[in-house]
Length: 85
Image 1 (cartoon, one colour):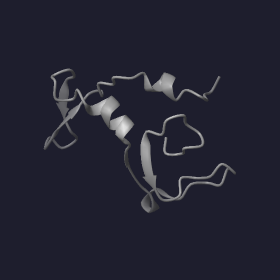
Image 2 (image 1 turned 30 degrees about the vertical axis):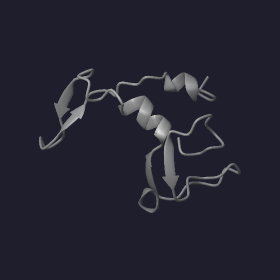
Image 3 (image 1 turned 90 degrees about the horizontal axis):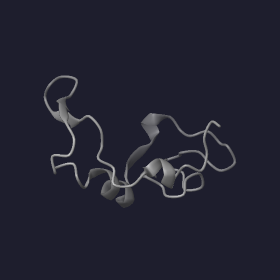
């Protein structure tokens, strides 16, 4: 999702080695960082506070997390340029 050459609209803003178009492997997770791009933030998180999805407690009960993200766009159709079939 961070490779601009493999997706139509990148959803992740990656910092580090995420592989190349020449099939070079990506670096280990400890050497990379990522965050959501503006498109992904607007599409996935804008309606999170509008009481649109249910929240459950996280693994240790300290915080609440959404069960799903309320996507405004069909991101699978937006970036569905490859798949298993």
